[in-house]
Length: 283
Image 1 (tube, rainbow, N blue to C red):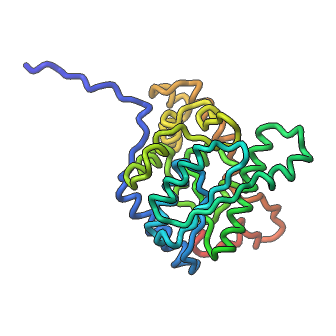
Image 2 (cartoon, rainbow, N blue to C red):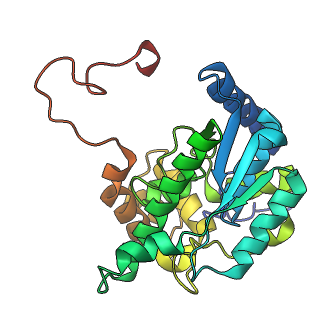
Image 3 (cartoon, one colour):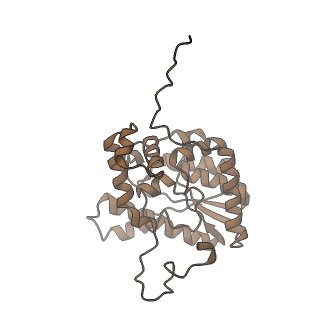
């Protein structure tokens, strides 16, 4: 009689994988359709931070539109990490796309000089919104479409500045968890230093995403993917997830729901835009 071999215990923190090749083909087709097919715009502008999200977005746009039609905008602030500029240059060089640098220090400090007591959160929001102002103006300059870079994990956890990071009309990464973005980055050939470094919004010195969030991305992604399947918190804990991390993730998702929607409109008629009046494709 053969001995019974017990299967290894299931790792609850195994985040969902993707087929990177299929995802890349689909996202390239999406970008071509949304930019050229639906809007008749062949150029793209991307805020290039030196992080993996903007790098992957740049690689996808280069495939979809051709690198000659992609404008990569670096927007450093005087306290930004010099390494971010260097990592962004790796992408510019690898793709052969047009690179532009717009220092936002004077613009940001021109406002913040009147708000000397602004805390780091407020200052970070000013930086993020200034960068989006620059990106949209550069899009007018180059007759290009601004392309967003926010991933699904950041969006679900509310880890972005409203009317800044999530503002561009097209976002190829919005349905990819952070760990899936890393998978796609490896497939696309994004330079290793960008993939391997600690993710950071680079709004403050020594800032990291995971430090701000209080949880590592792989663990957050595993919890989020189970939450999205409908598991309740007590069920997640029973499946092996840490109760404190479940509470943290659930609290961020529920507490930032408003950030994932357009401004709430007071409805006075049955033709309120986005509440009742929708294009056929919106239904």
